Image 1: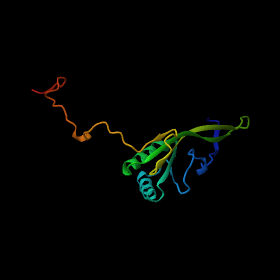
Image 2 (image 1 turned 180 degrees about the horizontal axis):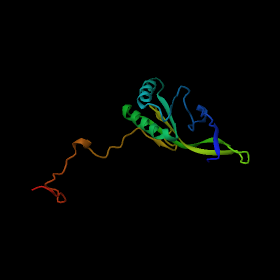
Image 3 (image 1 turned 180 degrees about the vertical axis):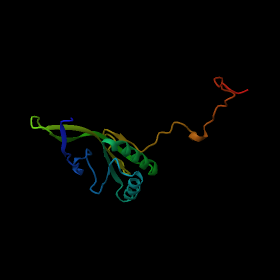
Image 4 (image 1 turned 60 degrees about the horizontal axis):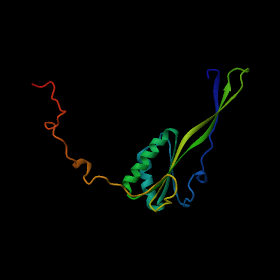
Length: 165
């Protein structure tokens, strides 16, 4: 690529009508997460808007996918009994490269960037929809994690105290 200079990018903006959910309410809040977005700002705004709208869509592409998932998990901890539908896909982005010399042709590179959309709702959603997660928390232990009994080192047969006299 040393013989080329990067030209323009054709990265079409995703519209609300492009989202992969069947029936979105008209007043849905759409949280678009970018790699440089501050999570505290996103969460504060999302918590305030969830009181009014009761439905949110979180979207992130490429490097912002991990941050998007983290924000959704924080929302699920702060607001109990949220219903969730997750959709994963790819977003096409075209890059154009211009040659440095006249004997070379221009290049067009089409990249597929991973994309995630997560629908959160206080109201129940269609449980038959692929990617649906119910609001019920499945608890397998009766004790809290901090209250679990710890084994004494003295009673553990595999414990060896090397280096002491």
